[in-house]
Length: 389
Image (cartoon, rainbow, N blue to C red; front, side):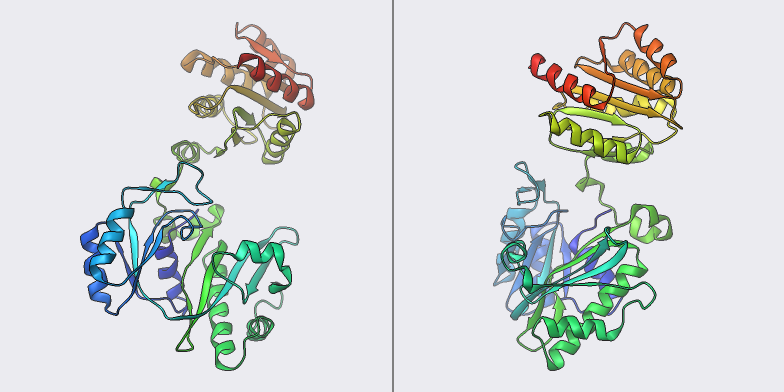
């Protein structure tokens, strides 16, 4: 689950992480009033969407008067913001964060995430932060410093100091940055986050270290322990199909392709998408119906796939262990009768009750293309979509 920048800063502040003063505005009038209340001579007006690269897309503006803050807010609110991470259609801006300006002397980078390769928390720090951090990582990777945390030792003060020193910092500034890293780490662990990114972490002209930006995502499986965080979820920032999938215990992620995928098991779903791409196709979604999904859930899964206007074909790939092939077959038939399947449909069934499942599909009267294995299924659906185009 993702949250907005202003929400992330509010959480980090509870762990002693310094953040600039600011408040959220839903109208231009509110933006003006916030700027006046904050005081100062410069204010940052930031579009609040669940996507990075806002600065490159014009979603962050520096206002030199409360009136200018109101003007920027009016330009952003109600308008789609296109960034390198939103795609060509952008994301609608519904609110802006008005923040007191900071005198920036240096921009740093900090993130804490789970290193899946070793199953441990990893801290990434660089003295070269800001909008071009991706270019820094690509061209000068030696400027990126990584620290994998030993779960027995956990994070210690010297870890933060060592990262600061590696970034070329010293004296009081190194101490303040080390303290900030410690606060962010404690927030990461306590809140069951999967990512916290501070870009930029800035050193001000007064010698303070503050989190000028903040991105946070959380482990969905741990949200039952953090109901207050779950309440921060902004459904307006999520795909309606993904919301519906969550309500029905489906793992669904919309993609940009045209071949819908219905698979049982996350690993098999990933493999299915890879093989589709291997044979020249583009998956339209990741969809895992789970190990023991009832017929109703399978029906809902197919409806979700068909609700995507870009889907031109569907590949069903089921390995029946816990999930029985006849249940999948019944779900496919039920969905076809309810919503109609007017695109090519390739089905690969294997495992428990496979013969019964194939018999149900054969007797359904549906124009189903049967496949022997995953490779055969991928070839058939790619070919069927091309022929139907």
